[in-house]
Image (cartoon, rainbow, N blue to C red):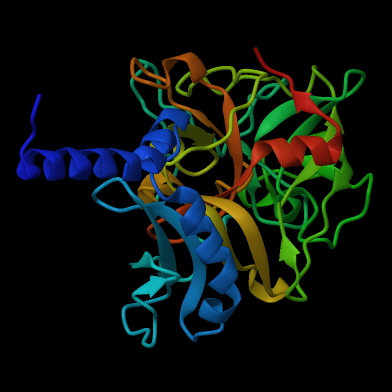
Length: 352
């Protein structure tokens, strides 16, 4: 059989194109967006230089409109100059997040959220609850305003309430065995009348410029003081098995200020500067960014973030823990992956 030169050239181009598409095909088969690892490498190589620019609050990786991975630069506002359009051949997207703050209660954000679809009186996560209290409600060290009780965890012998360092340890200033209360001080709680446990351990936050991986603390408690399910208008009981965050993953949380909210993972592998007010600013690496901005507000610090499975692709992972919320801005929520936190304290989620 004879082939014309045109046909042979066409076959050659077809084969070459197929071979060049193999890396992208492999990425899809592995579940990773095309170019993700290359974007991460470019981001990590240039983050220190990019974040030295005034007005830059962080970097991360995410997806462009065509589904390919990109490096994202996070800024305080629109007038940040001198930013690159690409890094090592990877396109750069600039996103205005505003300054990022720890999410303990700072001001009146309009009251609690909650779905309010139960047909009963709305549940107020800032109120005092009968013991054992649910997760996702107001709590804190007596010296802070208020944060959120994230979840009950266990080491196999004892049970603990998991929240943030800045909620239970007052940003490194508390002492082991200090009492923690429900509700938090801002919401009318006081010690010893409202004690639910004692501070057992916390990961110190480094404010010197070195990188942090988490803002977390645990308080020893009992099953008679702290339960393991949200209030009735929440998502219920989290699963004990965790899952890693992935881009566009649908998630949900229950928190002291905004109640039950839903969102999705927007960016991952984030390096961000977080403002803790008078305590200073701290650098965090390997963080997760969630949108929309309404996903959380001040007072939601410490909330456990779990998968929102619904009937879609994440159905099998519904209510599996993903991250612990600790900071945010008007447009994004910042959270730490849950697995390193559980490893740090030698505990597992005491859930379903």
